[in-house]
Image (cartoon, rainbow, N blue to C red; front, top):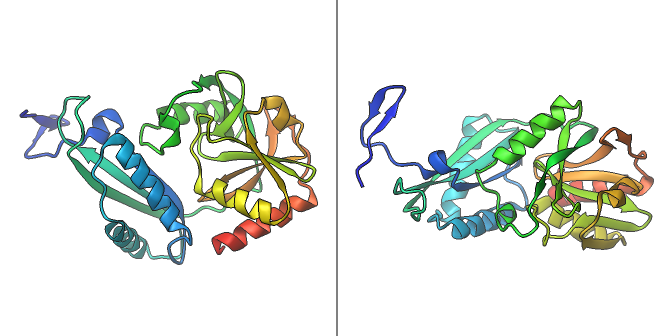
Length: 269
């Protein structure tokens, strides 16, 4: 099917059809580059490949992805960076067609130090409990954007999602954990959430430290009643939750620092 593309009125000759631009079809990964690739880069590449397979996008070889990441980091001057790797889909303009090509877009920017703590606002939208889309890190991020803007407008830092049954899910870009005594809680991957790489590492180091780890469907009251709440992702590591919907969370107990130090060691930070 011949497609004629125009950008601001100018004809784009032989422009590739980017389905990612038209439909948000694509996947991405983001992580910290601290003088070199993350120790667990392979976990990010595995997740990107699973997402590509889910959407039917032909993925590049891991060696190609690594090379593109290294080149982008070098052009940015190296050091402490935030990297984002997007796999864009191309093909027919018919929205339900399967993509024919996959292209890599890599961006590198200076990483800003994370805050000491983050205040959450409970998003007014609820996620459907049986959606398969949230298990993949897709470029269709509009729901997360709107939720984060809502939280900022309410004077908070980040949006907390609940599912349609009222269970805690995740924030717009982090997984959620909380502690209660020697127990460590986080929503299950059966919930409509992204199974984060750092989430996986926290579960591993938590068990090594002797925490009793519980993954499941938990109401908001369970998080509010915890000794300490915190958020994780591959850019910030692990950051404490200071408040939820205006309700202050307790200060971090001593074992919070133990878990955070163990994670930093695992990440090589």
